[in-house]
Image 1: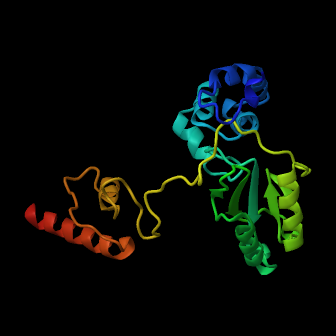
Image 2 (image 1 turned 120 degrees about the vertical axis):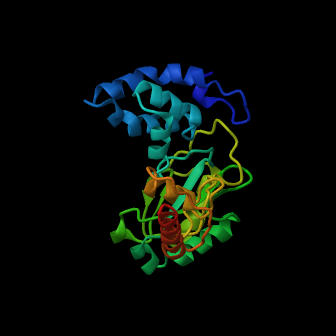
Length: 252
């Protein structure tokens, strides 16, 4: 049986076999470019097409093949809504919430999707069939409200179209083929973040970012901050000036 068609419940997915299977195509992609790293995006699409998402194994394999660090590969992959870093549903439904779509009724369309599917943003239905995401501008403003189904565009959305679309997907007759599923998706594929506050830069053990700021500004000085702040642009600047002034007086 072809490795890319293994059952989604097979927890022992053989990535080594998949990599060996795709290696000739990866080599051909790399050969097309002067710089190896230019092949990164098409390689990630290749692995996603065959595994259903861009796994950590896929990112490590790409890093080895094009001489990049895994961190550089993941930072690139995480930038795009075209790539899924965790298993998702067989139908990835990405509705545009850009300005033109908003002006043309995107809020109602998104609310209708959530109601029909019984899930919210960045969630997957329990049967693993649908994943739903509200994304930024898809650059099809002349056909708002728009979306992508498994990265294929759908334009001029209406509730009736959504009803027909979901029914066809459940019946297995929708024109766009389902994604490969080599792993069972979880309820959400949202990645954890350190901060959701615009005034809070995050950081493990340093929620205010003062220590991080200290390292940048005073890397050559024997100055450290002990204060904490939730208003980075105001209070941290004041704390900084106070500490510098105190250390300056202490030196005289």
